[in-house]
Image (tube, rainbow over all chains, first blue to last red; front, side, top):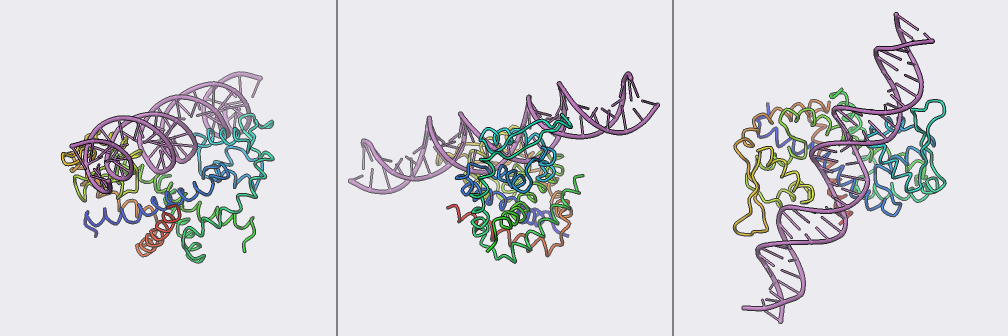
Amino acid sequence: MLGHVNALLLDNQVCFAVHAAARAMDGVYRRELAELGLTYPQYLVMLVLWERDQVTVKELGAALRLDSGTLSPLLKRLEAAGFVRRERSASDERSVLVRLTEQGTELRQAATRVPGRILEATGLELSEVLELSGTLTRMTRSLTQAVS
Amino acid sequence: MLGHVNALLLDNQVCFAVHAAARAMDGVYRRELAELGLTYPQYLVMLVLWERDQVTVKELGAALRLDSGTLSPLLKRLEAAGFVRRERSASDERSVLVRLTEQGTELRQAATRVPGRILEATGLELSEVLELSGTLTRMTRSLTQAVS
DNA sequence: GCCAATTAAATTGTGCACAATCAAGTTGTA
DNA sequence: TACAACTTGATTGTGCACAATTTAATTGGC
């Protein structure tokens, strides 16, 4: 078994690697998304809406695994920026429907330039990217179950 | 080349995977570190200090790639919790030395139980963990250079 | 020795992510 | 039908992460 010294070093190595990678990626996104006027979390929301316009806050939360504490203010800012509109659902007044504005729809075109730049910045081959994605997805699932 | 539809989906897939993994890991850490009275970023600071007591804020920042905007309040809270002490360096009064208290030193023992639990929660084999770590580290380096 | 340039850490401002709570609305059961 | 139980999204509180700025100290060049 690992002694306590080695265990803490291993922890530092792999878990910190995930943490550091996410932050580094955040940094590149910040630069790339600045001209679109979006933050990365906002960009994620837009990605969902570009795929399927008019979703509830609940559905957004499910897709992005975010709760309303995060989404409410985020959507408020997206609405203030003119990219989305929020409306109470007629069939269930607790629900809020989020829709793209024309401005929000048009933003998709500019956004298509982002992924290529991010992937290029990773310095990874496509095969590495796909394997990484698979491993991370499995790990995330396991981690998520560990706290539920 | 990828069309814009596929590109945005791929982006969602791999970059979101990193983002989601980091957040899921944060969640598991939150649970595991609660009994130690630490947050994950605080735990990272303690890891550095357990390896080498008495470091400057600058050195902490370099090790963890955090700036003083993040570290200052974080260290302030660690000090308030009784785990560390901050003192101005006599040789350079701009520098602040961070040292473990006795309480902070003793915390290491309890902390040794954390890594095993985290790694177990990942559901990955050790070989997968090591490969993942390697890929992420390379990617982080590349991403970091992309914004500098 | 003097002063401009640089450095270290703290502070201010902004946006996120989560836990806990709340108000309003909907559903399920007796 | 009435009401308890549950759901939805907003709000409150806390801690982080980064950009920009500030204050004080140190260094480097003349």
